[in-house]
Image (cartoon, rainbow over all chains, first blue to last red; front, side):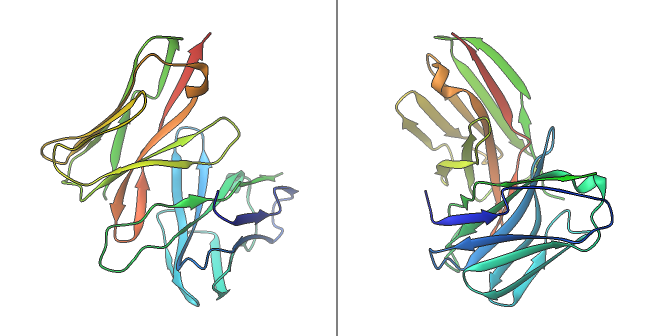
Length: 116
Length: 109
């Protein structure tokens, strides 16, 4: 498996509290992604990054923000968590050479977040 | 927006039976990737198909890309309990992947 870690692995929080999830890679890959996974919806892209300080929205970005100050770290923040954000969150990385079709994505182990 | 439809949602088979999952798109795909996620695990890349009509095999798994590059299939011959999991197709969209909703495979021993 690629060198990707996510922290925390499990978190229970209350509605209205801020939450930050961290993704750390040791592969020096350019692209990093945050997905959420819910039953019946597969994997949905929240935000992604194509370089340090370069980020863009995915299909379900409302209520989430991200930051990437270093190549190896990609943070996902829920400014004010809601129960609808209870989910499993996966980080993924990709080398994605420019001009070439999307490379393989390597996924982290996931973070299970419960918002009460 | 772009979307890949994946069917069936669930498949429950007896060990030794074959299994197929299908991925369909309304638009022409540049390529398609397949991933497997074991229960409680994370998605793991299986294969990428790029060429029209392409067929690739990995042991008991056969992957096909349609001639029009609008559909793809994954076929498992003689399923084993180790095949249990959810299989996702994913389409390339400008350095992002759009995943299908997945097919969950259950295998009765």
